[in-house]
Length: 296
Image (cartoon, rainbow, N blue to C red; front, side):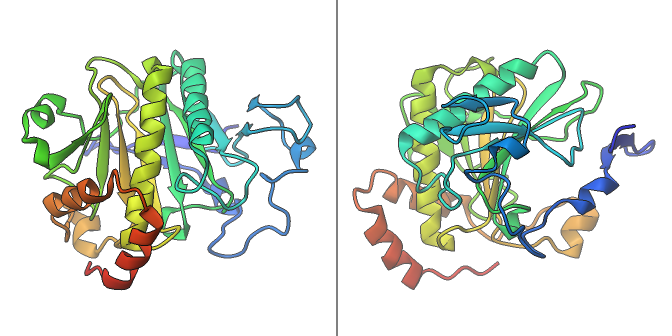
């Protein structure tokens, strides 16, 4: 019998997942396991679904993909970013970030015919991370379950003045006026009508740089290893949405579904534009951490 169940509210038609067994998963907010299951030396303890580097069972790996022991979807995978227990997107070498994104693409393509492939990343206790070793997750949600995810209006963003976005070779980086969270940022492919499964190696390199740089820049605002989430939209006209968890939801937001954003998206994108190509991000980080205080 499955450890989870999708349930639809007959009135609102919205879906929830009932997954009581997930309460038993390790939780960094309570305590961390004495031995990290994702670190080197633990390879024989976990069944591997996919890996980059080495041979099955050895410690000569760069990325590992494991089944989630506490799933909430028919297919639920863990993508371990690297053997390093501490480094994440802002500190890993760019070629390692490329490998992570290529692994996303490989696993997306492996499952795209089975349902809606949803890739997401939780970082920090405030971002819902249960184990501190950097990793992402992939779930496959049945087609009949409607995902309540914003659609991308790429044409609208493309027509805006260039001062309101950052352009890379393949992507637009912007902060929607309808942003629900302070400092949330979207990275959208300039191509239309494609899913993430169709991303090219050249685009992955561009995306790896953009994602790494954005996390570095947001370090300036929120401190090193700040809590955040991102997800990749599973449908056509895909995008990556990065959300710093700079605030906690209040009763109004939880009850009404209407978010109160205390940060001007125009100021956020201006800050990103100021630092996106900055040559000395560490110096800038030290300066801004001393100056910047957020009111949320």
